Length: 274
Length: 291
Image (cartoon, rainbow over all chains, first blue to last red; front, top):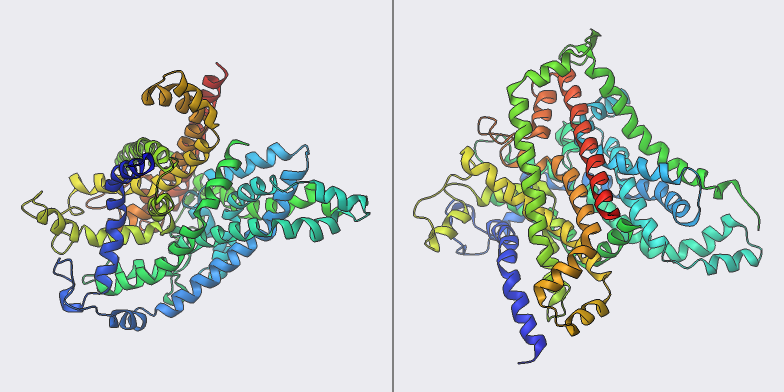
């Protein structure tokens, strides 16, 4: 047996217990989502047949479509809002030295500490005074703002890896700074911007407490709130619907995340030590 | 080279600064005003209250209990996830078959919203129909169903364990970045000198990833201290407030009991706690490094 095979065996054996605990809830979710209604309450592992109709029933019973649309709307716009203001800020942080740079970085750090939950009373009053309670656009504003520290951090660490020479060459050719930024820098930065945007999207997609506080009406619910409302304070819970809804709300995002997670390793750790 | 007003660094950071300031500073100012005012339950200010709201928070036994539980919650999850993530990151940075898949599996909990994770666990931990009880019975580990979430003695430890589980991916990510920054020749040189595995870990790996450990501790403490969905979606602080931490207590104070003044005071107290922790920790970490 070669050394690599031996390492492989040891590594998987050591990681197996943790993986078991990680995968257990996913197994529970998928199995329950596919159980026929009359078998849901008996804790057997295998359903007698795969009840695909659960997904169709769930869609109608939970008004899943409207919550899905709200979640997509909020997450896309929040990611765009965060990126529109973060790209210039991250560019400034990675390309210039200026007096307020340290202060701005501290400001972003402290803004991370003031998480939405600590500010929730103040945010509620802010949104109420803007007349945006129960309006998904309020979430766009709040999520966008709370994402800025994360997006600036990620973008800045990637921007630092883009060589300056190309921009300098463009200046030599007589292009202005602004033109260079648009024509030379942005195309190079596009992959980093796309990856960061997706993570901002996922952050917004998964947020709970702000949505719980600001959205009261059924028609403005996002997915986490809709699914929570199927469970909280109910005497009977249709668990096969809840798990089917959780599955649809979770799996597409999890796949994208799994595909992109290696970018996080680089972005976060480079940003962390600089 | 032509300079443009659009490329001044101050102009570039201005939109980000303004949006963040609007959403964060304005509510903070509101908290300051509310916490020192006498409010009715609809949030209408009746007059100044001085430090009354703060005094009431500190006099509330539920606050004291939640504060202690928050300390246990935060310390257990931060330390627990650290203790698991360091070996996991070391294993994941070794070269073995299927490493890509192993990384994806370890990172999975990060991709799922905490709310959904908590709801799925709530179902898996259900006393009669939950699959955890049936799995443990099947393995012969228990002979009668455990009411995991219905009793204080098991509900909170289970939530801490889930908290650790969902904190591992982020922590491992930080350490993977840290480990990849250690040059391979250091390890080779140590091996040539005849250093054992444990010795290499203690003398080389640990000191070199110390800055990453510090980052993980500070960031995880902030996240975990503020973490709301796991407890709220599983037990809403129950049974009988036995799983309330400060964030869930704050939410109840503000939106269930309508004590907005006290809730605002509690928010500021919590922010002060985090600020003090971060400053003290960063100071200590810097002093150790300069030594």
